[in-house]
Length: 223
Image (tube, rainbow, N blue to C red; front, side):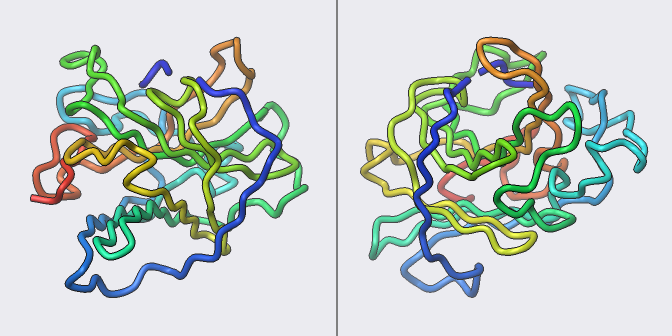
Protein backbone atom coordinates (compact mmCIF):
# COMPACT_ATOMS: atom_id res chain seq x y z
CA UNK A 1 0.00 0.00 0.00
CA UNK A 2 1.46 3.37 1.01
CA UNK A 3 5.02 4.02 -0.04
CA UNK A 4 5.97 6.40 2.65
CA UNK A 5 9.47 6.30 5.89
CA UNK A 6 10.88 7.41 9.40
CA UNK A 7 14.24 6.97 11.08
CA UNK A 8 13.78 4.87 14.18
CA UNK A 9 14.21 6.85 17.39
CA UNK A 10 15.71 5.30 20.50
CA UNK A 11 13.79 7.45 22.99
CA UNK A 12 10.66 6.08 24.65
CA UNK A 13 8.00 8.37 26.01
CA UNK A 14 5.51 6.34 28.03
CA UNK A 15 2.12 7.89 28.84
CA UNK A 16 -0.47 6.61 31.26
CA UNK A 17 -3.69 6.06 29.35
CA UNK A 18 -6.87 4.23 30.18
CA UNK A 19 -8.56 1.61 28.04
CA UNK A 20 -11.32 3.04 25.82
CA UNK A 21 -14.57 3.66 27.67
CA UNK A 22 -17.90 5.39 27.05
CA UNK A 23 -17.68 8.53 24.92
CA UNK A 24 -18.67 11.65 26.88
CA UNK A 25 -20.50 14.70 25.57
CA UNK A 26 -17.17 16.49 25.41
CA UNK A 27 -15.60 14.05 22.99
CA UNK A 28 -15.98 12.54 19.52
CA UNK A 29 -15.04 9.02 18.53
CA UNK A 30 -14.88 6.46 15.76
CA UNK A 31 -14.78 2.80 16.82
CA UNK A 32 -14.71 -0.16 14.46
CA UNK A 33 -14.34 -3.92 14.71
CA UNK A 34 -11.95 -5.81 12.42
CA UNK A 35 -11.97 -9.42 11.23
CA UNK A 36 -9.55 -12.07 12.42
CA UNK A 37 -7.26 -13.86 9.99
CA UNK A 38 -7.47 -11.35 7.16
CA UNK A 39 -3.75 -10.86 6.53
CA UNK A 40 -2.73 -11.62 2.97
CA UNK A 41 -0.49 -10.77 0.01
CA UNK A 42 -3.26 -9.72 -2.37
CA UNK A 43 -6.19 -7.33 -2.14
CA UNK A 44 -8.83 -5.89 -4.46
CA UNK A 45 -8.45 -2.13 -4.82
CA UNK A 46 -12.09 -1.54 -5.80
CA UNK A 47 -13.57 -3.35 -2.80
CA UNK A 48 -10.67 -2.57 -0.43
CA UNK A 49 -10.78 -6.20 0.68
CA UNK A 50 -8.21 -8.98 0.98
CA UNK A 51 -8.68 -11.70 -1.64
CA UNK A 52 -5.74 -14.02 -0.84
CA UNK A 53 -4.88 -14.95 2.74
CA UNK A 54 -1.65 -16.08 4.34
CA UNK A 55 -1.90 -19.38 6.26
CA UNK A 56 -1.84 -19.48 10.07
CA UNK A 57 1.56 -21.20 10.00
CA UNK A 58 3.38 -18.12 8.68
CA UNK A 59 5.18 -15.92 11.25
CA UNK A 60 3.29 -12.87 9.95
CA UNK A 61 0.00 -14.44 10.99
CA UNK A 62 1.12 -16.71 13.83
CA UNK A 63 2.41 -13.89 16.07
CA UNK A 64 -1.11 -12.42 16.20
CA UNK A 65 -0.04 -8.89 17.09
CA UNK A 66 -0.24 -7.72 13.47
CA UNK A 67 -3.89 -8.78 13.06
CA UNK A 68 -6.28 -6.02 14.17
CA UNK A 69 -9.48 -6.97 15.96
CA UNK A 70 -10.64 -3.38 16.55
CA UNK A 71 -9.46 0.24 16.42
CA UNK A 72 -10.65 3.58 17.75
CA UNK A 73 -9.92 7.26 17.19
CA UNK A 74 -11.13 9.79 19.75
CA UNK A 75 -10.92 13.51 20.47
CA UNK A 76 -11.45 15.28 23.80
CA UNK A 77 -12.71 18.82 23.27
CA UNK A 78 -11.85 19.69 26.86
CA UNK A 79 -8.22 18.55 26.66
CA UNK A 80 -7.81 19.17 22.92
CA UNK A 81 -6.24 15.73 22.81
CA UNK A 82 -6.55 12.88 20.31
CA UNK A 83 -6.25 9.18 21.21
CA UNK A 84 -5.62 6.48 18.62
CA UNK A 85 -6.02 2.91 19.83
CA UNK A 86 -5.91 -0.58 18.44
CA UNK A 87 -6.54 -4.09 19.73
CA UNK A 88 -4.84 -7.03 18.04
CA UNK A 89 -5.34 -10.80 18.12
CA UNK A 90 -2.49 -11.54 20.58
CA UNK A 91 -0.43 -9.56 23.08
CA UNK A 92 2.19 -7.21 21.73
CA UNK A 93 5.80 -8.29 22.43
CA UNK A 94 7.33 -7.46 25.79
CA UNK A 95 10.10 -4.87 25.45
CA UNK A 96 13.31 -6.77 24.78
CA UNK A 97 11.58 -9.78 23.20
CA UNK A 98 13.11 -10.55 19.79
CA UNK A 99 11.02 -10.35 16.67
CA UNK A 100 10.59 -13.50 14.56
CA UNK A 101 13.44 -14.32 12.20
CA UNK A 102 13.41 -12.01 9.22
CA UNK A 103 11.50 -9.19 10.95
CA UNK A 104 13.46 -5.96 11.44
CA UNK A 105 10.64 -3.83 12.79
CA UNK A 106 6.87 -3.81 13.29
CA UNK A 107 4.54 -0.80 13.37
CA UNK A 108 1.00 0.03 14.41
CA UNK A 109 -0.13 3.32 12.94
CA UNK A 110 -2.80 5.65 11.64
CA UNK A 111 -2.41 7.93 8.66
CA UNK A 112 -4.11 11.35 8.83
CA UNK A 113 -4.74 11.82 5.14
CA UNK A 114 -5.88 14.60 2.80
CA UNK A 115 -8.54 12.35 1.28
CA UNK A 116 -9.51 8.73 0.80
CA UNK A 117 -6.41 6.91 -0.47
CA UNK A 118 -6.35 4.01 -2.92
CA UNK A 119 -3.32 2.53 -4.75
CA UNK A 120 -5.24 2.30 -8.02
CA UNK A 121 -7.95 4.96 -7.93
CA UNK A 122 -6.42 7.67 -5.72
CA UNK A 123 -2.67 6.95 -5.44
CA UNK A 124 -1.56 10.58 -5.17
CA UNK A 125 -3.57 11.43 -2.05
CA UNK A 126 -1.07 12.60 0.55
CA UNK A 127 -0.85 12.42 4.33
CA UNK A 128 -0.88 15.44 6.61
CA UNK A 129 0.65 13.42 9.45
CA UNK A 130 1.20 9.83 10.61
CA UNK A 131 0.93 8.56 14.20
CA UNK A 132 3.11 5.47 14.71
CA UNK A 133 4.05 2.99 17.43
CA UNK A 134 7.32 1.27 16.46
CA UNK A 135 8.93 -1.86 17.93
CA UNK A 136 12.36 -3.04 16.76
CA UNK A 137 12.88 -6.10 18.94
CA UNK A 138 14.37 -4.15 21.84
CA UNK A 139 12.20 -1.15 22.68
CA UNK A 140 9.07 0.79 21.75
CA UNK A 141 8.77 4.38 20.59
CA UNK A 142 5.76 6.37 19.41
CA UNK A 143 6.27 9.23 16.98
CA UNK A 144 4.36 11.81 14.97
CA UNK A 145 5.66 12.42 11.46
CA UNK A 146 4.73 15.27 9.15
CA UNK A 147 3.54 13.53 6.03
CA UNK A 148 3.72 9.76 5.54
CA UNK A 149 5.36 7.29 7.90
CA UNK A 150 8.79 7.82 6.30
CA UNK A 151 8.62 11.61 6.63
CA UNK A 152 10.42 13.83 9.19
CA UNK A 153 9.58 13.21 12.83
CA UNK A 154 7.77 16.10 14.50
CA UNK A 155 7.84 14.73 18.03
CA UNK A 156 7.76 11.61 20.16
CA UNK A 157 4.39 10.79 21.71
CA UNK A 158 3.04 9.27 24.94
CA UNK A 159 1.70 5.75 24.50
CA UNK A 160 0.62 2.67 26.39
CA UNK A 161 0.85 -1.05 25.63
CA UNK A 162 -1.39 -3.31 27.69
CA UNK A 163 -1.44 -6.89 26.47
CA UNK A 164 -3.19 -6.87 23.10
CA UNK A 165 -4.17 -3.17 23.31
CA UNK A 166 -2.17 -0.10 22.43
CA UNK A 167 -2.97 3.60 22.61
CA UNK A 168 -1.14 6.72 21.43
CA UNK A 169 -2.03 10.30 22.34
CA UNK A 170 -1.28 13.57 20.55
CA UNK A 171 -2.52 17.12 20.84
CA UNK A 172 -4.59 19.05 18.33
CA UNK A 173 -1.83 21.67 18.31
CA UNK A 174 0.77 19.06 17.25
CA UNK A 175 -1.13 18.50 13.97
CA UNK A 176 -1.70 22.19 13.34
CA UNK A 177 -5.26 22.14 14.71
CA UNK A 178 -6.52 20.42 11.56
CA UNK A 179 -10.29 20.65 11.33
CA UNK A 180 -10.81 17.66 9.05
CA UNK A 181 -8.89 14.76 7.55
CA UNK A 182 -9.25 11.05 6.79
CA UNK A 183 -8.02 8.33 9.15
CA UNK A 184 -6.56 5.04 7.92
CA UNK A 185 -5.21 2.62 10.56
CA UNK A 186 -2.75 -0.10 9.61
CA UNK A 187 -0.26 -2.67 10.87
CA UNK A 188 3.11 -2.84 9.10
CA UNK A 189 6.08 -5.23 9.05
CA UNK A 190 9.59 -4.39 7.80
CA UNK A 191 12.14 -7.00 6.74
CA UNK A 192 14.62 -4.32 5.61
CA UNK A 193 15.17 -0.95 7.30
CA UNK A 194 15.27 2.45 5.57
CA UNK A 195 16.63 3.52 3.16
CA UNK A 196 15.52 0.15 1.79
CA UNK A 197 11.88 -0.57 1.08
CA UNK A 198 11.34 -4.09 2.39
CA UNK A 199 7.98 -3.74 4.10
CA UNK A 200 4.33 -4.73 3.81
CA UNK A 201 1.14 -3.04 4.98
CA UNK A 202 -0.74 -5.91 6.58
CA UNK A 203 -4.11 -5.05 8.09
CA UNK A 204 -6.25 -1.97 7.61
CA UNK A 205 -9.94 -1.10 7.90
CA UNK A 206 -12.43 -3.76 6.83
CA UNK A 207 -14.84 -2.73 4.05
CA UNK A 208 -17.85 -0.86 5.44
CA UNK A 209 -16.55 -0.88 9.01
CA UNK A 210 -17.35 2.78 9.77
CA UNK A 211 -19.86 5.41 8.58
CA UNK A 212 -18.73 7.43 5.58
CA UNK A 213 -15.85 5.04 4.84
CA UNK A 214 -14.33 5.14 1.34
CA UNK A 215 -12.04 2.18 0.57
CA UNK A 216 -9.87 1.87 3.73
CA UNK A 217 -10.27 5.51 4.79
CA UNK A 218 -12.74 7.01 7.28
CA UNK A 219 -13.62 10.72 7.45
CA UNK A 220 -12.92 12.84 10.50
CA UNK A 221 -14.95 14.34 12.14
CA UNK A 222 -17.26 11.31 12.22
CA UNK A 223 -20.29 11.40 9.92
